[in-house]
Structures are given as C-alpha cells and as structure tokens.
Image (cartoon, rainbow, N blue to C red; front, top):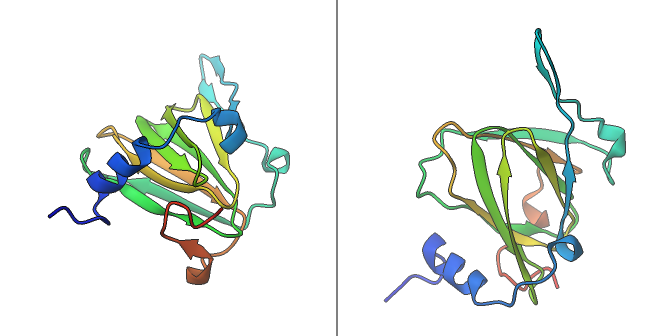
Length: 149
C-alpha cells in the first residue's frame, strides 16, 4: 500500500487536479540581469514585493529525486528565487494546480498564503533563496492540499 503522505503519492494526487491559470495562484516576475565585463548583477528590490520581508532561507544540496515542501502557509507569503541551477515548484489552492520551473536568476515566483506546494526536480547545482513575510511559526503550516481553501 502506498503511503498517502509520501512525496511521489502527493505529486500524483496534485497532478490529478485541473490545471489553473498560474497567475491566479502565484505570480512570476522576470528579473533583469545587468551583464558586463565585471560579471552579472541581478537586483531584487524587496520593497517591490507584496509583503515585508522578515526571513530568508536557502535550500541547497538536494538529491534530484527528493521532493521537498508538501505543505502550505496560512499567513506567510513567500518569494522563491533560484540563484543557480533550477527547481520545479508545483502547488494548489485546493481547486486548481500550477507548475513552474525556476531557472537560474531569471525570475521570482511569489506565493501568497493558502497555497499548498512541493518542490522537486532540483538540479545538482541548485541553490534556492526563499524570502518570507513571517518568522518561522510551526502553527502557520498546513499539510493537506485543500487546507488553505
């Protein structure tokens, strides 16, 4: 019997939901890279986010088949940026699902509260920066796909 909380089973259940317009669930904003002989500068103005940043964390050294996340937040906004490599983020509001692959420094994915998500298909060199609107709070998490609706 398959564990209903296992990453692969959650991914299968998530993909059984109808695909919704991604922009109704999350917002993806392009980032502008300034490239010259000195290197690449990719600015992120935190004041342009729809929330005040309170916490940052990085995800790195994830084995490719690993599925992370599998939860949502009741109050916390998050902004996801892939600094190197790539990662796929899939999620749902309980009715519709979205899927988006973030690639190195090209865009930022903004996820409002109430979205359940998981992350997978990390490239071996992936380094993901997450900007959050709240400090860590275990009570803010929900684990059921329809828990935010």
